[in-house]
Amino acid sequence: MGKMKVSEAIIKILEIEGITAAFGIPGAGINGLYKFLGQSKIRHYCHRHEEAAVHAAGGYYRALGKMAVALCTSGPGATNFVTGIYTCNIDSIPVIAITGQAVTSQLGKDAFQCVDIAKICEPVAKKTYCLTDPAKTAETFQEAFYLAREGKPGAVVVDLPLNVQNADIEFDPASYSPRPLNAPQPAAADISRALKMIGEAKNPLLLLGGGVILADAAQEARQLAEALNIPVIATYMAKGVIAEDHPLYAGHCGIQVGQPIGNKVFLDSDLVVGIGCRFTDRHTGAIDVYRGNRKFIHINIDPREIGKIFPADLGIAADAKKAILALLAEAKKSGKAAAHVDLARLPELRAEMARKTSYSQKPIIPHRVFQELNTYFGDNAVFTTGCGITQIWSGQLQRINRVRHYLPSGGAGTLGYDIPAAFGAAIATGKQTVAVMGDFGFTFHVQELAVCAKYKIPVIVAIINNAYLGLIRQNQKYAYGYECDVAMEENQGMMDYVKVAEGFACYGERVFDPAQIGPALKRAQDSGKPAVIDIVCDPQADCSMGAALDNCKEFVY
Image 1 (tube, rainbow, N blue to C red):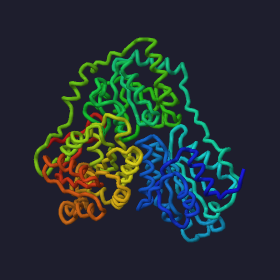
Image 2: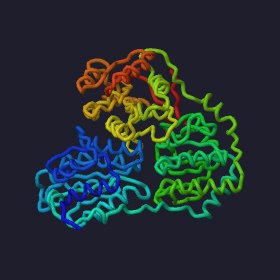
Image 3: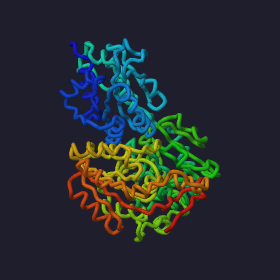
Image 4: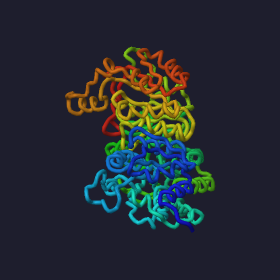
């Protein structure tokens, strides 16, 4: 044992826990920690907004499956973290968010930049701490990392008063080790019952959620589908879990990012085996239609998720990978395969029911943009998207064939997530990352282009510029019959996003012709810089959606 500053001990703990990347902004309230961060092997990336630092740490994990940390100073720096923490936590993304704090003697006394961030973040984080006892440093961080990773992962906040950061403690790094994780196994009786239910169903389907990706079980899930010979529907958070040309792939279902093929196959089913999913509202729509007369098997690592939205006929609280492997072993033993009525026609149905994207008119129909993104990048890019009508088009129309290549803000739908998350994903993987966003969303955290330029990370931003708050316009029009303050014609006129890009030392180009989208993307890549491609689209284009799986309205132009 030897004496060292709490801050030095924390940095050593981060290294032992496997942290190699940190995203943040130094400030007076966290400078005790930054002193030792700067001396460590952890690479720090300085952002232009605290929220963006958390999105970058989240994007890093989403792309790689490896944790990063986010750091900021006290007061407004810490409160700027809140949206990023919420965005990670609701999507089950583990991240440690470390905030600076005033000295302990000033807590609760309205001192400068002294705010109870641990209390503020309680509803949107998995766990929060305000570390006031230096002697509890090691146990606090050990528990924080464990909780971030175990079960349903999430965001954990550790608030560090400045005097605690600078306190001396006895700490031996050799005595510290990460707390082991223990993923729950499914009960054998439940696995047998599940296989029996599948065998008795006429039209069973496998519904794979984001938890399958978090458990690194995509390959095993595909093997299970093949062994059972049943269709696979992916939730929005599981795009890429199975290749889109796989004979068993039946697309997405849902009232927004769903697809006609997915909704049809779902509505034709009599048994749904949901693994690593949460049955949330944008997926299910009207619950009575979603449930119908079909049965549900729900497998989730968090027992609180089972029955939260509606009762399952069979609930199994288990790690997704362990449950899939157990089902696969049982299925191989029995040798029985299901006989879904739509199975042989799935490839044909996918082609028949695919939404049109081959529009050639000007202004550009947004659907064409996604056809060009699919064609140009193929499987070679990682995509991020935040919220709004562009995000829904993206979920409906982008073809993703690999896990961790489509990284949306799912449960939160956060404008401004896109660019910093793409930055974090690029740091994690070294791959080309593309932020797909609307013209309004572009102005949220656009300053992060400067971060991309500084670190020479060539993120490409594809703006679907429809000069509207498009999703809100559509909601006002069809739900209420009016339009108020959603038009932004200036975004196709007086606003010059090319100059914005160039001002942040990036490549910029505006596109009016659909035939020029692909060449513009190539010019962006060839520039070697971060890039903004501003694609001028039809302001009145609508997005297919509805209130229930059986009444989604389709739009064709």
